Length: 117
Length: 114
Image 1 (cartoon, helix red, strand yellow):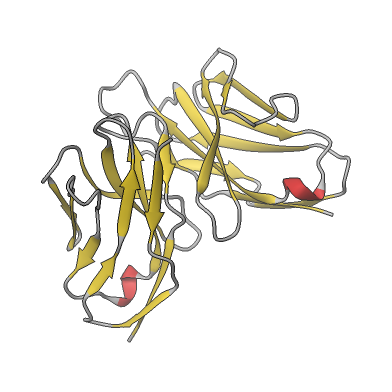
Image 2: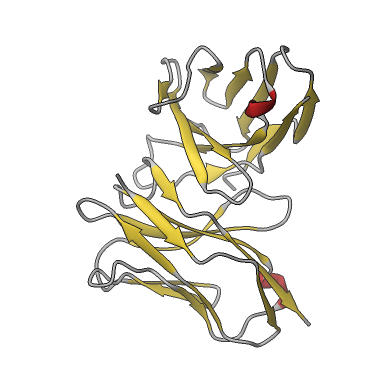
């Protein structure tokens, strides 16, 4: 149980376009989802935390107008990279948890590799 | 702020060898410590955790002990298998179950050869 999927697994886009990445909890209700970014040979950096039905909370230094996060249902959150540029190329990972269940850990998706040309 | 420093890889070992992956941390207060594993093509999975000093987390033959005096949480396994090949991440959190903000190390890629 506790499976999280991401779609797409990889995407290539042109500079200036927008890209949407989906994160789904397949067998539990995700009251909270987290979005991370990972650069090569670097650690996962938390970008934002989103609670279902609320606006996301962004970490310091993350542009909320560039990285739009929507968490409109208990099984789906989306990250939209707007007006993407080559420096946005990275590996994006989501995780999810059901905050109504005491002590439930975060469960991670397999990640989405974004390449901006 | 909080940080995790992890042994750089990649690490290549022969099957049945002893494994140690070093992890040290810097944190305010008393964090919980975690090891996550990522197998090829899959998401990160919690491998083991420890929530207070001197606690030992263990799972699948892996162990790590929360050492407050040395701010360390080194991962060990006595006899590795080919199936242990993966990327291992050390992490800390202010909560017991990592359901709040996690701070990760850079990850260590482990390859076990038969």
